[in-house]
Amino acid sequence: MTKKVFVTGGAGYVGCVLVPKLLNVGYEVVVYDLMLFGYDGLPSHPNLKVLKGDIRDIPSFSAAVAGAHSVIHLACISNDPSFELDSALSKSINYDCFEPMVVACKAAGVKRFIYASTSSVYGVSDAPEVTETHPLVPLTDYNKYKGLCEPVLLRYQSPDFTTVIIRPATVCGYSPRTRLDLTVNILTNLAVNKGQITVYGGSQKRPNIHVDDISDLYVQLLELPGYLIAGETFNAGYQNHTVAQLAEIVRSVVEREMPERAPIQVVTSPSNDLRSYHVTSRKIKERLGYEPKRSIEDAVQDLCAAFKAGKLPNSLNEDNYVNVKAVKKAGLK
Image (cartoon, rainbow, N blue to C red; front, top):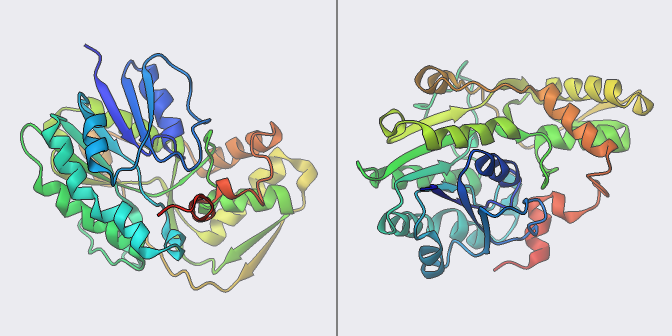
């Protein structure tokens, strides 16, 4: 029997890369999403069911998740500036409904629950390597609530309900629903379309991971034996760079891929965003054998190819590329 995977937020940035991978390896997939960005980024496929739904509506969620073997929980109001929005709205989506949702999954007979937390739960750290046991130092409501969900999920871990927490680094690269409010993607958009990259601060360290690599990890987590992941928390990042180093990587790749854009300037401005941490992903490599394959250079190259192909029109002004603007525009309550 084909296993059914239920993906919350499956029409979003990561979801639009993950869902085709799940379909390609033979899963039946249900996407449950508010559709703030539409669902044009998802393929048409006989094994894909797309449902418009709100994870806060527990009766509807419970009915939709029935029959699913596994849940990959991506849905949230994502990234730190999103809390420029009504904080009660963000708390309701990112935290208040989380436990009722987990309870509903367990009651529906779901066997595996994969939670996409965030590496920004670490806030600021001068530790040379931030491991999964590092204290969580939330600087914003976003990373506070993402972190608070983690112990809630682990309370429900049981032999028939495998739970695992992933703390992804900042995701980068092209998706059919690309976000241009994430560090590498922002810098690439500016380089391609303005010929000038503005770096705010520059010394902050940020871990990154390619959108294809984090999607491959979620597929792998469905296949692994439960005992390897049950009740575990894993960082998932690849390269740690300062924001200034990221800008230099972006500049050099864009100048190579799109020589007509050269020379690209890098300008530095002060920043009040102090989040800085050097995340290690040694545990996930040693325990699960997982290692990302794609570099920041690959992500920038993919974005350049998308710009050249006209896949990211009006990228400096279109609200749909920026989560905060899209949520405001939708008038979500």
